[in-house]
Amino acid sequence: MTRATLLYKSDPVRGAVWDRVFREEAPDIALEVWSADAPPSDAAYLVAWIPPEDLARSAPKLEVLFGLGAGVDHLNLSSLPPGVQLVRMVDPDLTRSMVEYVLYAVLALHRDIPAYLADQREGRWAPRAVRRSADRTVGVMGLGVLGRAAAEALRDLGFAVRGWSASEKAIPGVACFAGPQALPDFLGACETLVCLLPLTGTTRGLLNAELFAALPEGAGLVNVGRGGHVVEADLLAALGSGQVSAAILDVLATEPPAPDHPLLRHPRVMLTPHVASATHPDSAARQVIRAIRRHREGLPLENTVDRRQAY
Ligand code: NDP
Image 1 (cartoon, rainbow, N blue to C red):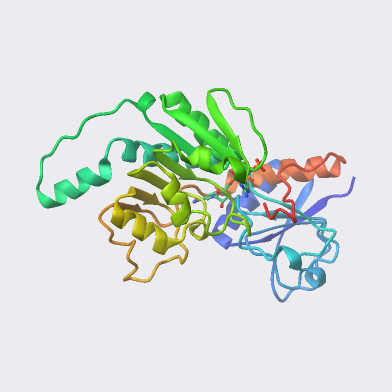
Image 2 (cartoon, helix red, strand yellow; image 1 turned 90 degrees about the vertical axis):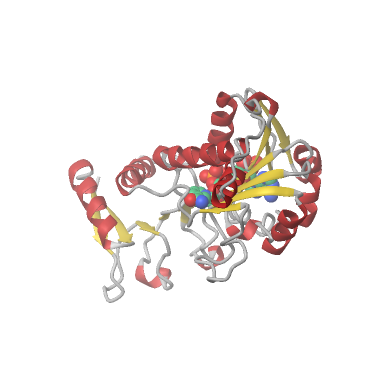
């Protein structure tokens, strides 16, 4: 079998790690660094966060595009050549980091940390009742690779966990709901809501006034999906009325936010700058090596994106 070529288009620091992993572990695959000035490449594989605009010209033999992120909402799917398969990043390290973040955020809300931080800023010593995790219902929107892992970890911590997805699921110890008709039932008990949906035409703006009103009063929100899932004006109103008691947000509609963005300094909002999870270059490189080998053996690719569903 001839050597496969993977074209790499991303930052050079991570590129050095990819280069090392490919040299040490994949002599059957050449790693070629993409350059805007280079002549068209013969590569059948490309890995990129954002592919070159003129993909059909710069990589005319491309068969598979590997995205560097778990989400593909930043890509213009209709501009990809029709024959090219898109594979998103699924990697155990990425999943583990996300689970860590979700546990941190749900536990912070469960143990009233936003309120205690506010108390401390004001010099107040004000104990609140400690609730048992089993008495707290946490809902996870999105039961894919990340949502399912988060739901299982929350379940293992003792929370009453429910999840919502597009298609029916069966996850031991997690009450599963599916489809738009089940959404009100799902939301009705979620004292903490975690968003781990992909951003698509259907899910954009889903976390809006109507959804917040369907939650129990004083619910907490964790958004680790995308900023576009939340209608920020509606969240501010829900925080103002107390319908949402606190929010932990890793993503915002515009990143970075304007310095005067009202969520940035909101006393009941804890923000992080889109760091809940990240693609680690060495483990990502190994996932891509594995996928290229599977593809060359004629096996079906895993984690492909359905262009019609956009995730
Ligand atoms: P998956 O594609 O594995 O899972 C997506 C889940 O969402 C599936 O369960 C799917 O349902 C469900 N879903 C999609 N559309 C709908 C809908 N309209 N109604 C109900 N459920 C829906 O994705 P991942 O778990 O790998 O990643 C999820 C998202 O997390 C990414 O798209 C990305 O936006 C975000 N992310 C954020 C990061 C951060 O650092 N903040 C890092 C990594 C990812 P079904 O299973 O039935 O298809």
